[in-house]
Image 1 (cartoon, rainbow, N blue to C red):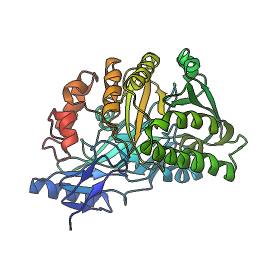
Image 2: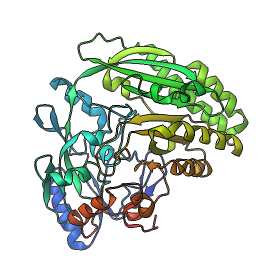
Image 3: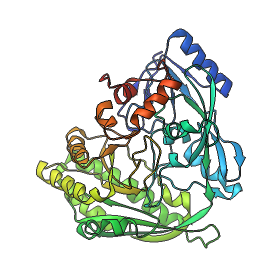
Image 4: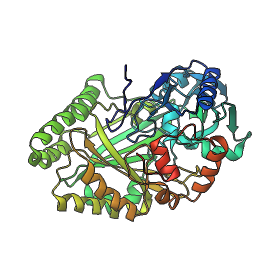
Amino acid sequence: MTRVWRNWGRTVTARPAAVARPESVDEVAALVRFARGEGRTLKAVGAGHSFTAIAAADDLQIDLGALSGIRGIRGSRITFGAGTRLYDVAPLLRPHGLALENMGDIDRQTVAGATSTGTHGTGARFGGLATRIVGAELITGEGRPLTVSDTENAELLPAVQLGLGGLGILTTLTIDCVDAFLLHAVERPMGFDEVLDDVDAQMSATDHVEFYWWPHTERVMMKANTRLPGGAERRPVGAVADWVEERLLSNGVLAAKCAVGHAIPALTPAINRLATRVYGDREYVDHSHEVFTAPRDVRFREMEYALPREAVPSALRELRRAIDEAGWRIEFPVEVRVAAADDTWLSTAYGRDSGYIAVHRSVREDPTAYFAAAERIFLAHDGRPHWGKMHSLGRAELEARYPRFGDFLAVRDRLDPERMFTNPYLARVLDGERVE
């Protein structure tokens, strides 16, 4: 029987020759040694939430779901199995009074998959999830276990923190967590120009800020989250109100508007204008993970680029003009977030405070023209593509945008000289081969 693997966004299909589900690190190492001896390649797969083919396996696929849960605790440093789902992290950390410092708005990914692709949240003073990695264990291309931390093989840590799945099979990750905290969330509509005319102040006004602009409208949805101590009073959204906002409006209405917009594209602008008026004006206080993340039931495709933070207003205005001039009817909002500069070699925020612009289209729609136009704008503003989201760049373009790209490749040569962990996507972005 032919095995078929599809990612969540339905942008990638793979047919691995075999799928292995190891239950221990020793079994992972044995699988790598077997593949090496047979001259085969193998790829670890997580939740399949990347929109690129970064996890696609055309030979041997390894599902690390059994390598999950907490594997070690040293103060605030928690070692997780690589296959641990992000939605399981909060309950695992709760008895220890800890939390992840920052999170994206989706928690379906595995810890290894999220960090290996550069998953990030928002916050002018905060980095992506990979920046909190202080240690990792992986199986190298020779089938040998390797420990990397800030005290052991420390020179490899900036590469291993965000390794694209190209350095080895991660088996554990040690993340420096923080004391559990609450977030005071304020969500309200604002004007497009009102936000962009002073975007740096808007995005730095509190700890975690992001906004969504609905194409064909003058409105954005601003989300501002302020960190509070873990002992602060919770004022969560009621169960009914939460269902109305998250399930009925954010997902149910979005699904309906995508369906109507697909059938009658001319209605999309009016539907978007209506959407800006019917939801997203609320205030509450809850556990950090409850505020950071939200359900995503409507399948979509996404491209996201990190720009120098100061370039966000001009890039977003250019994107707006491109949409209007092309006459597209864009049913999904454009998302804008920020992150602090970091020193992880392949982080999209390496060496610079960054602003992120993400564009989306429903799986019903062809994103090609829209994403190509957006990409041209982002590249003109010195953008770097999110590793797990759709883009067209290869090694030459990427090498010019990452000062430590060559150092990362040198680590790859050291840990996987025979390219055990490659696939067409990695061949394109790391080797310059146009084979995808």
